Image (tube, rainbow, N blue to C red; front, side, top):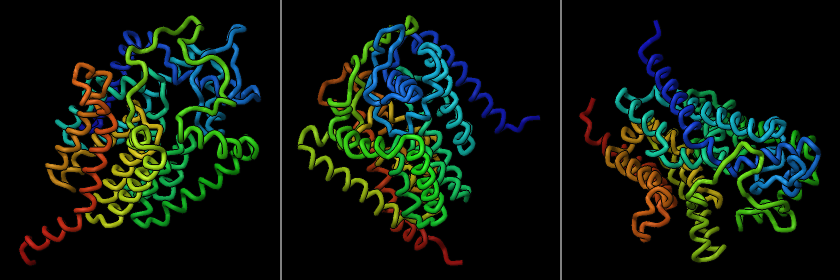
Length: 410
C-alpha cells in the first residue's frame, strides 16, 4: 500500500503529465520556440567544431534562423546531444525535459505542504493561464526549469545537511546559467564551510573541463568580449553575431511565434539602466545583492536558511540584467515553501508574497487590458517578492526577541 503522501505526489505528477500532453497538442506544438533555436543551433555548431556564438547552421542547405546563444562556452557542449537531433524532434525532447524538471520541482516541494496548499500549488503550476511564466517558458523553449530544478535540489540537500553535494549541484546549475551563482549568498551568510568547499571544488572541476574542451581562447573571448556586451545590451556583439534573425524556423515542424512578441522584462537592473543609465543600474544591482547578504547574515530562526535562499533567488531575478517573464519559474519553490514563509515571517508576509506572485502572473502580455501605468508588472512583482523576503530576514532577530520576551519563564 502506497502511503497517503506518496499517492498525493503520484497524483500530482500524473496531473502534470496529462496537462503537459494536452498543452503541447493545443498550444506549444503550434509555436516556433525561438529561444530553443539558440541552444539547438549552438549544440549542432559545437559538435561540428564551429563557433556556437557566430556560426551559421544550415538545414537543407538554408541558414537556420535562431536567436543569439549567450550562455557560457561549456554550456554549448551540454547541448550537443540536442543538436544531434533534427529540430522537430529536438523540440519534443526539450519539452519532455522541461516537464520532467517541473514534475521534479513539485515532487521536491509538495511533501512540505498541507493537503489544501498542495492541491492549490499543483493547480496553479500546471495551469499556464494562472501562472503565466510557465506558458512563456514552455512557448519559448527556455532552460530555466532545468536550472531551477538543480537549484531547488541544491536547497533541499542543504536543508538535509548534505552541504558539499548541494554546493556542487548549485555550480552545475550555474554552468547552464551563470546568475545561479547569486544563490551562494545564502550558504555564505550561514557560514556553511562545507557548502562553500563543495562549490569551490565544483568550480575547479568545471574550469578544468572548460579549458580542456573549449580551450583558453574561446573562454577568454567569452569573458572579455561576449559577457560584457550581453550584460550591457542583452545580445551578442555585432562583430560576432551572424546568420538570420529569429523567425519561425523553416523545418516544416514548427509554427507561429506567440502573440506577445517579446516577453516582458523582469529585471530591475535593466529597468533602471533604461531610465537612468548604465551606472545607476549597476549600482542598483550591487546595492540589492549587498542588502540581501546583509539581511541573511542577521537572520535567526529555524527557517532562516530556506528563507535566505529564497530571498537570494528573488535577488538573482531582480538584479541581473537578463531576467524575463519566463525566468520567474525560479519562484516556484517560493510557492512550495509558503508554509515556511508564514511560520518564519507571519501571515502578513505570506499574503504579501502571494500578492507579489500574482502581480508577476498578470504580466504585460496577459493583462494588456490594464492601463499602461500598471506597466512593468513582472519587474515590480519580482522586486516586491524580494523586498518582503529581505524585510522578513532583517526583522527576524527583533521578532525572535519579542517572542522570547512574551513566552512564560520555564
